[in-house]
Length: 444
Image (cartoon, rainbow, N blue to C red; front, side):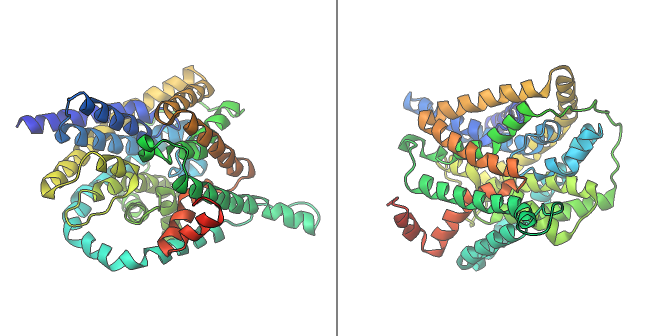
């Protein structure tokens, strides 16, 4: 009974903490989890052991809460992580029409649908079904990953070439953004080879090896863009209802569930890639479906990937959160699995109940204080966290990543191309020739 109460208390506290984390644009939950892992190790050195029934639900609820509530800055401040692709599409349109609150709550409904899928559909089936699927696909992961990479690169169509005289100038204008996207993918891929083979991060912080690069690639460019942007956010209307029905929820759950589930199960595939593939596969044109499906996809990607580590008989680790937890705890049987599933259900319900007042609070904040100041504060916190976890070497990696991450922002190409930092080296390693490329680059 005492253990159950401790787990419940840790779940609620972790969910509430995720409220603070989620409202800072560009700040990722994994950055804070890294500090918590260091804290647990430090306490262990002092002879103080934190029980698993405390830190497991605490960190799990942080992931669940952040995956739901991070929609708020993604929609209202325009500073998303890479998986929140909706902020530059229908979500931004809702914001500029003064319907940011409605768009945020619609995404929240999608997130709640994602929690339902995990707890009531995936949860009961996962222990029997997923180990079989994993056994069938284990030998095919490498070529599936190459197909996805090819599709990502080929699906970025030239965005220019609509003006000017015909000839090479028009051709160059058409290929400007596409060439920037290809360059971003391959230069970030080279950065990935360097970090995976000869990282300047100390061995004690090896579990945060890639974190500074991701901060530079995705968080810093959007914070900088917010700070220098001349756009003004119009007053937001607090709606009493949402224009959704059962059909919209079902269609968004299908599209988001397909993308998020695929991203959670396959290695290296992220929520942004899963959302792109699912959106193209289902061809949903309704803006409401698009916005809500991203809420479903984000929850299934972050929370579902973390949950896979605890599925009995599966034995896979997906996502930064799972890798950090794995350094502290090895899941054992159905006890840990049921603990995580209960944590997901409780944290998901609490997060959704918090979403409306928290969204109203952020709308009040950006109405009173310019969102550029909020982004500047977030930028300072992010840089400080990178320094605390990875020191000066991490700041250097972050600066390099920022330079690469600004390329798609400035040339209007997909930010997903920055994921070459993981996709390219890991695809090469899974195919058996990654060491040859690393040797060619002088890394081994």
